[in-house]
Amino acid sequence: MGGGVGGGVGQDVADTRKRLTVTVNGRQCSLMVEPNRTLLEFLREDLGLTGAREACDTGGCGACTVLVDGRPVYSCLVLAVDCQGKDVLTIEGLAVDGRLHPLQQAFIDHGAVQCGFCTPGMILTAKALLDENPAPTDEEVREAIAGNICRCTGYVKIIEAIRAAGGTGKPACT
Amino acid sequence: MRLPRFEYSEPGTLEEACSLLAQADTKVLAGGTELLVKLKQKTITPRALVNIKSIPHLDRIEETEDGGLSIGPATTLHAAATSPLVRDRFGLVAEAAAAVGKPRIPYMATLGGNLCLDGRCFYYNQSLLWKQSLPPCYKDGGHLCHVVQGSDHCNALFVADTVPPLIALGAEVTLTGVDGETRMPLEDFYTGRGEEVNVLQPGQVLSRIRIPAPPPYSTGVYLKHSLREAIDFAVVGVALLLTVSPEDGTCRDARVVLGSVATRPLRAVAAEAALRGKALDEGLVRTAATLAAKETHPVSHLGVSATYKRRVIETLTKRAVRQAWRQAVAGSGSREGWR
Ligand SMILES: Cc1cc2nc3c(=O)[nH]c(=O)nc-3n(C[C@H](O)[C@H](O)[C@H](O)COP(=O)(O)OP(=O)(O)OC[C@H]3O[C@@H](n4cnc5c(N)ncnc54)[C@H](O)[C@@H]3O)c2cc1C
Ligand code: FES
Ligand code: FES
Image (cartoon, rainbow over all chains, first blue to last red; front, side):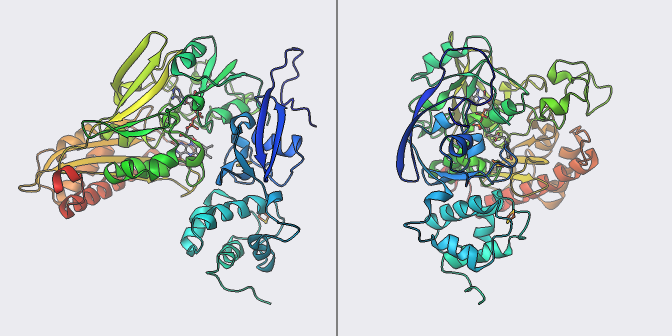
């Protein structure tokens, strides 16, 4: 896709796009986007960052979670143009120089990834939690990820991985 | 699901916003967590959206001279829930704000958006495609209600969590339009009609929320019951503001406001009257709770029966009165009174 024309098939020729300048994964980009484009569509289709997933598309599952100015949000319910000047972090921006983020490594070590559909949203939610509270309890982890649904793992391994990355959990079985 | 096309603007002032909103078929965009879902589902397809978050200072929380709070409508629910100004003296509002679509929605949604939330119904909040299999209901301009067969009106529920606590506290709202400002008690902002939930007119913005200082010796509670703890609307929400007499611990005043049981936020006036002027004891708690359940007329809807709702109202009211009473006795209520 690309080009930024979401939705309408109208024949109107007027250019209704707005210039959006936003920092994504540490890099500033400036693109013309249609106002009716969600942040999720902008990331996936205009920037090719497909780590944020589309599932329910109505704010009920967390698969599309990204961090905007450090806060986890559902990118399916945010307009791209509403992120003017903001700092967006997606799962693609987490590893540094090919080295996985401790949370990513912990998810692998603890077997917290099965189909992987929920994983980017889970990890970013966990990052926001650990940034605010580096040593969360089980309860605090559960509360933080309550907005992210996983159909596969049953959550236990995800919670273990997040606590391990935070340094308060059990080490992974070897 | 793609969003339909719309014109989009980011006004710099409230006046500019109002003149944009006075044009046909234009809606306020705040946090977007309700509006954008409705747009995706094509429940509504406005011509234009006006993003009020671009207006400076509309997200401020300030103490007023009379000891109350003045809150801008674009304040996020997260900011409201974590602000010491709200938490310390209006804890019930903070609790309710944090409970809206917990845990993620509060980062995105605004307090003003919660106050302006439309009535909700399983049959209305669906995609256009889904709805094509049924005749339109009252809220979609039709002549029937799918929830209550034979009903002569829309039964969409009023579910916004922050409203019962704000009404219990006697909050007021300011509506600003092209013709000037109107101030009214929040309670009067709601029509009781599922089809059109509030009195907002085209061209108007809910521009300010004012909460008066809580009465001396008062404590407040908001309790929400939902089927899931996270990302879920209330089956019932109960807000209570209880004022006790410091001399003998009797109840001076009580305001009980229920959410998710009717087409509007509902004062449980019989329960309030039963509590007022009485010595608080367990018998009174039970009486008030039974009255609160009896004076409401919830409708059965999607596995949540009216009987179940009544029981939840009774249980939550009991818990709320006990909790407020305990807090009052422990002196942790409104600081004006207890210190
Ligand atoms: C997954 C999910 C779970 C949810 N759970 C809950 C819940 O538990 N409890 C609950 O109460 N709600 C819930 N909601 C509904 C909604 O998220 C909240 O009510 C939220 O507070 C709406 O605020 P907003 O800023 O996002 O409003 P928006 O979506 O931006 O606007 C909502 C409506 O109000 C109008 N509006 C907004 N601000 C103003 C203003 N200042 N003046 C005039 N009109 C205005 C808009 O035009 C629109 O019609 C949930 C939504 C989702 C998607
Ligand atoms: S896709 Fe955004 S919350 Fe489900
Ligand atoms: S791993 Fe499959 S949904 Fe979570």
